[in-house]
Amino acid sequence: MEDKTCCIFNIAVHYRAPIYTLMDRKLNCDFYLGDHVNTKLKKMDYASLKGFRKELPNIYFSQNVYWQKGVVPLLFKKQYSAYILTGDLHSLSNWVFMVLGFFSRKKIGLWTHGWYGKEGRIKKFFKKIYFGLADMTFLYGDYARNGMIANGFDGRKLYCVYNSLDYDRQKEIRKGLSYSSLYKEHFGNEFPVIIYVGRIQENKRLDILFTALAELKQKGRNYNVMLVGEDVEKTGLAGSIDADMRKNVWFYGPCYDEKILADLIYNADLCVSPGNVGLTAIHTFTYGCPVITQDNYCNQRPEFEVITPGVTGDFFRENDAHDLADKILKWTETMQGNRETIRQQCFRQIESKYNPHYQIEVIQKALSGQPEVS
Image 1 (cartoon, helix red, strand yellow):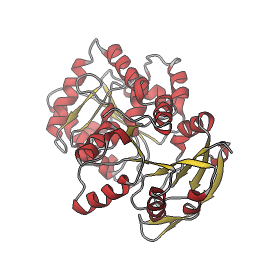
Image 2: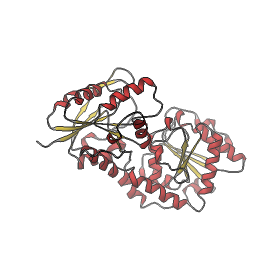
Image 3: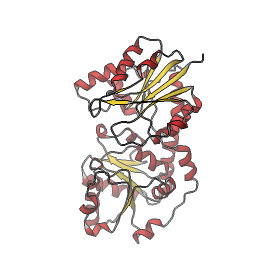
Image 4: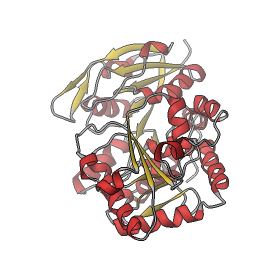
């Protein structure tokens, strides 16, 4: 019987469909996927994977701690020589699986955020045990990898798999994009356009953006703002914006049409995500839009690493609206005459490693036993 890889994930969210589909096609994988998590996430179509075997119930004991039913017996299936699990510290079934697997000859990998840099002593203790049981750890970025190495982990077992969206489809859409007058027609002016794409939540700190823009307005610098996303927490952001500024803000609402999103992003000058930035950075870079976000990496999502200051975006001091204003002004001035160069630099960053094709190469390397370069 041919050896196979068994993928056990707490859930397969819709944006992961491209990489899981590629794994399904290029690796000899079976998939066992969780039925839900205690966060509002849209699942991909599990049946679209030819290697999909079963949906496993996640039984929650608290908001975060859970047991994934049916996971542990999979360790004893002879056809599987390697496993890739969601590296969730709160999964009790994964703990049992990892401990038992440590004494087996099978290779076990964890796909995880890994290290945030703000762990207390207790969390560090448990993370060192948990991740120490793995033969390979797939991480979303170098920041987490460097943090784990600094805390004693073997860098040869730590593989940066980064993150991705529907790269192939988005790249095809991008071929048909061109500069348009959509913002000039909507706003009735030619001010630089700042876009934010994502759910509107308190922790995204969009209030800081509008404080910064108010400061710039007092200096005679005007901007248009495009907000694409649902106000999921009923933040009341619209009502808090100064009436004089509101005419330059477009509350577009949620949008799930990739072609429309592509056009909106491509024609914007700058993306600003004042709280943290995650997949928004990957999304906007794919269509050539640079990103500004806050500089406290402990409070960031791993995708912040896509930003190269002064090249594809910038970082401002966390919670400092004045510094954000300075960075916005600097960037909009920098872009004059350089917009196409910046756009191409954003493209190159995504094409270098933030795509499913790069990810599959890393996973294949790990499964074949090749150590990562420390």
